[in-house]
Image 1 (tube, rainbow, N blue to C red):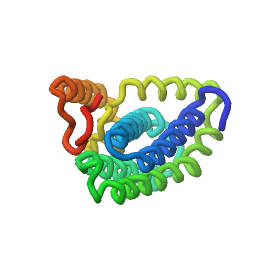
Image 2 (cartoon, rainbow, N blue to C red; image 1 turned 90 degrees about the vertical axis):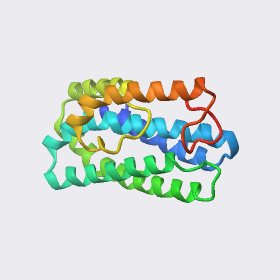
Image 3 (cartoon, rainbow, N blue to C red; image 1 turned 135 degrees about the vertical axis):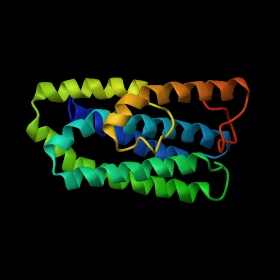
Image 4 (cartoon, rainbow, N blue to C red; image 1 turned 180 degrees about the vertical axis):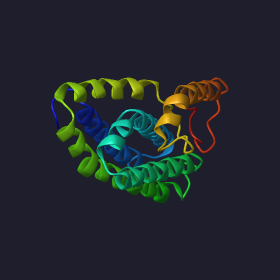
Length: 193
């Protein structure tokens, strides 16, 4: 764990929370699983959107195009898996195997970030720049969408322009579902937040 609020420290903390939440989802059943998955979905969707807008804009300048292209493809795979899993019944037989596919896609992407992108950020940016980006990462995470939007994943400029609107749409959709006492498609167990 890195000290302070640098972008790398913030990202390591988010990765750890997401990893822990995968375990929480797998360890639960019934309405608790739906709640745990909703939390996981929100963590991943917010993390990816913020990462696209903040980290990717920096690493695109620091790393060779092949590495950033691979990272973009990994983000898109995670977003697609998350969107597919969101439509899956959390109590269905396919849910846990699909959750593992999502976890594998996330782990692949996180491992590449941690071993390739984070060292470049630590080596090339000043401590002040890293802290500024850490603050921006936190801000972007707070206003990021709460559902996956695969068409935006891996496209920093599109994410920066559309993410606030996608976030508002997600919040309205979640509140409407809660007000109607219904669940999102595939949530079968509780209304989304």
